[in-house]
Image (cartoon, rainbow, N blue to C red; front, top):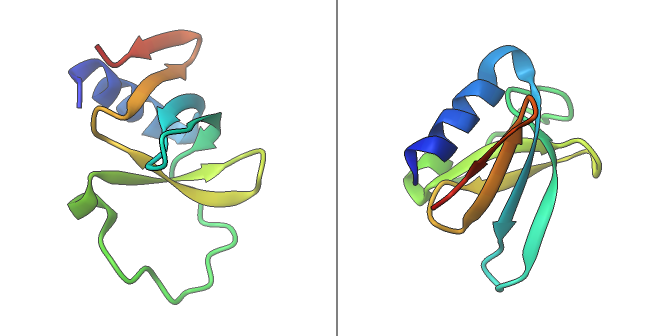
Amino acid sequence: MSQRVEQAYEQAGRRGRIFSATFTKKDGTKRSGAFRLGVRKYVNGIGMSYNPSEKDLIVAFDMNKRGYRMLPLDDRIVSVKVNGKEFLNV
């Protein structure tokens, strides 16, 4: 992951800021949306069956679809926009 994108995720994580991200899904299609880190709503208490960080993923809440999504931390991420600043994965 590029250091700029890592920096964007860190900024988004502070105080639960909403950010937009564009990335390529595993099937090759592009996806973008508004996300937020650190959301605890809609959690059922069971937990996940795997550790997302082991698969280079980060858990984010999709503000539009009201559900959790896994965002890639690798080269599949195209851009992240936080606070009006766009961080490109170059």
